[in-house]
Image 1 (cartoon, rainbow, N blue to C red):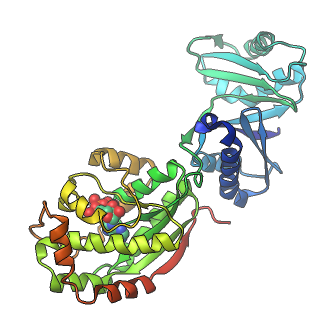
Image 2 (image 1 turned 90 degrees about the horizontal axis):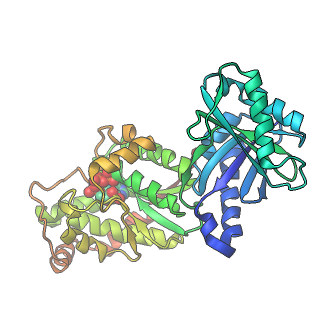
Image 3 (image 1 turned 180 degrees about the horizontal axis):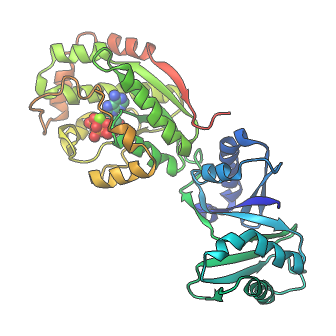
Length: 394
Ligand code: ATP
Ligand code: MG
C-alpha cells in the first residue's frame, strides 16, 4: 500500500506573505534530515506539505521519527493513499487502520473534501466509511465526542488520503528562519537546553566550547560532542569550535584574586565567543545561564559579563528553575550525558568564596591584572579547532 507523510506546519500560518519562504526552509530542513534514508519528494498542497517516499523500501518509521524533531511542524500524519473512489476508500480505511481499530472500543470518521468534484459530500463519506468499518469490526462503536480512534479521510486533488491518529510535531519555527547565533556550550545540563530552545525559535546554531587540558579531559570534550549531537537532531548541523583555554585559566589563577576567578573567566569567554561568533556570521550569543543559580549568575555578575559581549546575549533559561531545565534535558535526551562526572573548565579553580555582587568597574580592574591579555586571547582564538556535528549526516 502506498504511504505518504502529511505535514501540518505551525506558526507559519501567521506569517502571511512570508509563508512560502518559511515553508521552503521547513522543506529544506526535512530534506536534510531524511535524505540519508532514501529519495523523497516534497510538495506544498493546500495548507499542508506532502512528503512522499520514492520507493516502498524506505524506512518510514525512521523518517517520521526524524521529522518529529524538525521545528516548524504542528502535526504529522502517516497516511495511506488511494484512488478517489468510495469503494477503494472504504477498503483502504479498513486494511490500513484495522490493527489500530481492533484495540479500540470507539471511533469516528471525519472527512475533508478539498476536491469539490468528488461526488460524495463530507458527511456522506463519513457515513460510507463508518458504516463499512462497523460492519467489518465486531464490537466497535461510534463515539463522536471522545473516540479512541479518529479515522480521517481527506479527498484532495490528486488522491484520497486516509489516516488515524495525528502525531505531535516539535512546534517552533523552521531552524534558519531567525538567523544564526553562537551557543557557549559546556558539558552541563543548561547550555544544551538553551541551544535547543533557541533553535526552536528558528535560530541556526554555531557552538563554542572552552577546553582546559590537562585540567579537563578528552572525555569532557567527547561529552560536548555527544550533547551537540543530540541537539543537532533538532537543530540540524552545528559547527563546533573548541578553544584552548588552559593558558587563560592559569593566567587568571596566577594573577587575579580568587573571589573573582569565575567572573573574570566568564568575561574572557564572552570576548572570545563574540569574536568567533562575528567571524562565523552570528548575530547573537546564547548561554545556559539561569538567574541566581550560582554566584556567577547573579544579576550583578551577569552585568559584569554582559559588557564583554559584542552581540546580544540570549539566555533562554534565565527565568527557569533547575527542575524545569532538567525536564527539557530529559525530553531531548541530553540529561544522561550531561550528568557524567567529567570536569568542565568552570569546575577547575572554583573559588571557595566567590564575590556575588561584583561591579563592572571592579571586574575591569581585576581583568586588567592579566598580563598581555590581547595576545593571550589571540592565541586562544588562533588555536580554535572546528568540528562539524550532524546527527543524521548521510
Ligand atoms: P551548564 O549546565 O550549561 O554548564 P551551569 O549551570 O553549569 O551551566 P556555569 O558552569 O556557570 O553554569 O556556566 C554558565 C554558562 O556559561 C553555561 O551555560 C555556558 O553557556 C557557558 N559555559 C560554561 N562553561 C563553558 C565552557 N567550558 N565552554 C563554553 N561555554 C561555557
Ligand atoms: Mg557548567
